[in-house]
Length: 328
Image (cartoon, rainbow, N blue to C red; front, side, top):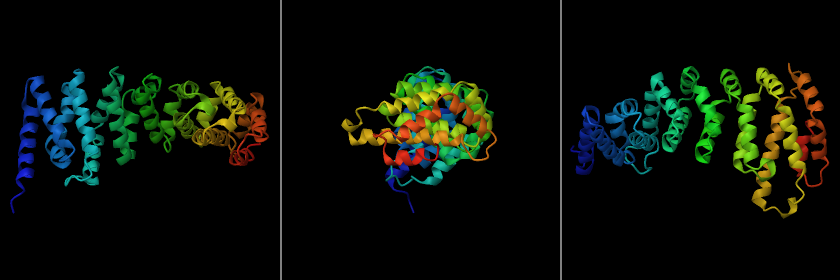
């Protein structure tokens, strides 16, 4: 049975464009081929992936210094991971195959991490988005590739310093999904000055009372780095971060205009405070190796005092008081 004319025509065009991508010696010709492939990526992800994926990845390596070409390639790859829902070729198997192609070769993940050193907006943003998509589908393999990549973790954590919110927030999200299970990854992230960087973002975003979802995400990442990780908890104390927890609690006590807040603002504020209290609980596991040292540090720096003040503050919501009862 013959394929529909439109599909047959698309397949032939994709084959021709893929051939041009791999055989052209001029950058302009390769870029034109990528533009053509990008126009098909959303509707024909399987055809583009099967014909051109390795050529596209190879172009990232060959033309990595040309920002416009890198941008086009990364856009095309992202489209393959996120095709149109009504595309006859869209399927989870295609996305899994794409993730396999990236994670089965260390160099492919390293290539994406290398673009994080570029100062240009789109190569940084799109590389982070691609890494997130690959991590979601092949978690363990992606973790291993990032762990072993030269300066892989260092480059990822450095993204938290980017002053462009979309890039910084994408990096924050990627680190959050990267760190919940691996103690080794948690340690590497922490020793890249992650604690100070996280607290800096929280402050820039308005702390617990005025900060939005980004503050909550920061606290979730902080929880990932500290949960059942005695080494990181010890480093947290020695790094002078406990007083910063006390300062955040003190900020939460200064909410004199809580009654005038919009409902969505109250809800986000409560989520931020709850996330902070969840961080505190990680230090106080009954019988834990570092629990006594954590309690001593909390007492010395006023964390316990602020927790008690929060518990008896009239503006504190009941769900927050219930969480406080586990700490006091």
